[in-house]
Amino acid sequence: MNIEETYVLSPIKVNASGKLRLFISDHLEWEPKDREHELLLWRKMSVYCTALEDTAFWDHFSLVNGKGTTIVVLGLYPLTNEAERFYDLTRSVLPEGIGLDFRYQPVDRPTRKIKHKEIKDTCRLLL
Image (tube, rainbow, N blue to C red; front, side, top):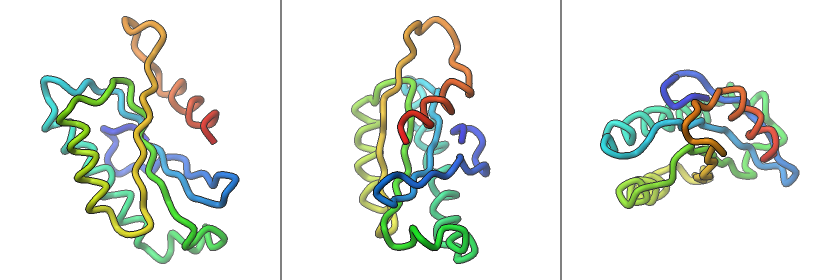
């Protein structure tokens, strides 16, 4: 689920409307390393898309197949202008039926480090 754990899929949930949601936890700041950040996100989303194209994956989610899938990125920091352009471009090249959603999830006290458990708890609340 963590943006830096490229080959680890997040907990996969089906929401009330029958759509599949995969989560990416993004705890990295955008500036001054926008390009590195984009590359990490792109790699992670590519792994997700590869999994979604695998028929074995859908054997576990046969009731959802065809109803739409959304990759939800939970970001600790707001998007910069460059990051917004990256998200727009990424949405335009994702395979049909796969959406991308960014949710800004700031921490109340920015001086402390967020724990992955907190982001997982946030994911559960969003379902």
